[in-house]
Amino acid sequence: APPARAEWTGQVGFILSAVGSAVGLGNIWRFPGVAYENGGGAFLIPYIVALLTAGIPILFLDYAIGHRYRGSAPLALRRIAGKLGEGIGWFQVMICVFIAIYYTAVLAWASSYFVYSFDIRWGDDATGFFVNEYLQLADAPFTLHFVPSVLIPLVIMWIVTLIVLGAGVVKGVQRMNVIGIPLLVVGFLALVIRALFLPGAVDGLNALFTPDFSALLIPGVWVAAYSQIFFSLSVAFGIMLTYSSYRRRKSNLTTPGLVVAFSNSSFEILAGVGVFATLGFFAHQQGIGVGDLEGLTGVGLAFMTFPAIVSEMPGGPIFGMLFFGSLAIAGLTSMISIMEVILAAIMDKFGLTRLQATYRIGGVLAVISIVLFGTTSGLTALDTIDNWANNIGIVSSAVAMTITVLWIRGSGRMLAGHLSALSTFKVGRTWLFFVSILGPVVLGYMLVATIIGLIAEPYGGYSAGYLLIVGWGSVVLMIGGSLILTSRRWRYNPDNFEPWPQ
Ligand code: MET
Image 1 (cartoon, protein in one colour):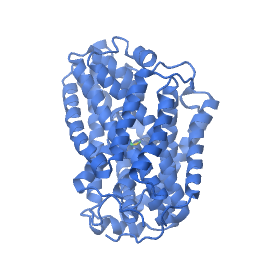
Image 2: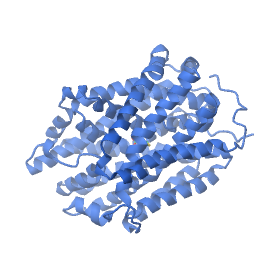
Image 3: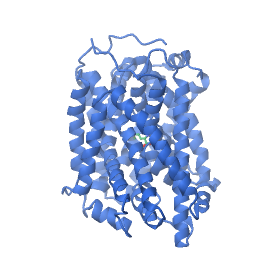
Image 4: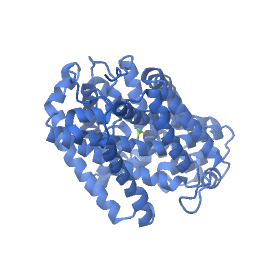
């Protein structure tokens, strides 16, 4: 028989770990820029609609499947929907493989910049420093020269991640979150409060929160809101499913889910406030409007614009350490959850021990990540893979999972009963409507719109050949990988099993 499944020590350990996964790089640098680009204050409407109609309902779906069928994504989905389910589960694992490889790179940069903040190492030209001195980006992608400034923190981040994972669900993952999350909240609150007292802060907040209601008519704004919610809540690609498979038999499922979802969104809006207050200060220094600033999204915001602001600020080193320290802790706890999806699946299917899975599979992924991102090929591949993994991979996975579990298997009512059995917040028809009707339809539409958009207009101005290999190629590898993994033999019969009634 397979070894007994690990269990969180209780509800608090689970909630902190789930919050640790949800709150990540996506909250701190992705959200503020996405909100700003998509109508500022008016973005909050699609954002809240996406949270209530898809984010929380699919979070509950992940919880119900993981808990009732007690397995990693491929195991739990196989038990509910046979080989098709297993294939979707491995597809979710493959998405995590791709994300893990680049997510650690951003984590490594954040930890370098935490150290660099002590003496503002980047000097007066933050952008030049990041691109030329720190990353040493080559002109063409795929030139493989190791860059020690990135290589060293990258290796350290992989070692820390694998040590935490190797120590197990309770002694590693839960402990890391129980220590990390309070630290993150305190550090980040200090940063936001400091930012609010900077001259010009109010202008930044106005730029973020002044509504542009015409944005509500643009479909792309709604697509951006739904994608942001999935990525940010860690739903639909195996993470919340795997974490809830470690909950005890008698568990309140929906109430902690609401706590996790609202904590994540509160943190996200707080990050918007902190980042835009800081940008308001920067615009104020230069005597321009916040709308005229450049580099307000993604990698540019965190590693070019922010360092430049830190250089100009009284007490800059402390502010920089708080910002990059928060980014590193938030990213590390999310990184651990992504890797746990992969390791749990390998342990379940092939019967490896946790240590074997951690060092073998983790080791291989670490080497790939280090070769790709510890070298001069760095930045270009990262944003391309990020775009395809999120906008195509995660959205497809959500569509495939809801259609298979709810339409093909018709398990909606039964899962609603499982969720409600011991929960103080009961779910019924409204939940079923969101996950089984609205979800697949809205998400299906988003997916088609995104695919058409990517074909019509080459992403990021890269060449078609490059996008074919790196972007679409990643999706082909995800599908191919899941087919191969699904075809392998199980170490223990996965179907010899009784689902948990609560
Ligand atoms: N939820 C995390 C974040 O917001 C990401 C999990 S893995 C993509 O960064």
